[in-house]
Image 1 (cartoon, rainbow, N blue to C red):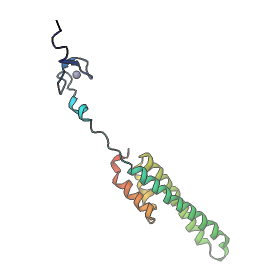
Image 2 (image 1 turned 60 degrees about the vertical axis):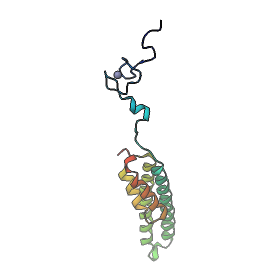
Image 3 (image 1 turned 30 degrees about the vertical axis):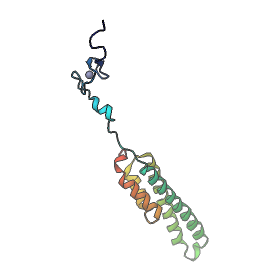
Image 4 (image 1 turned 90 degrees about the vertical axis):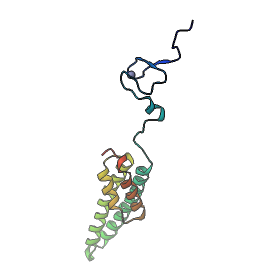
Length: 144
Ligand SMILES: [Zn+2]
């Protein structure tokens, strides 16, 4: 004789007690099986922070290269007013370094504030602008 209810019970994955096979919710611990069936809504992750971060990184490289060229070029003419050029070049380098960090943080989905600042610094470039938008709209995906 088949034991009654052989196919009609199962053990709750949460508390281990025997519950009805088709129970939606465990009567003992309240574990909700409808959620696991339908797929528990998890933190949504898109490629936007990664793409945005890469774009910000690329834009920051433009700044670093441009800043390097301006600094080096201006320093040749420092006696004839190249000093301002050096200041501009160094400024570009600093912006480039900060936005480079911002791009890396964006790819890692960390430090939203720095990622955003990095994007703002490169906003004058088209890829920087797109990167900033992608980072800004995916704020929820960042850890902080
Ligand atoms: Zn349970």
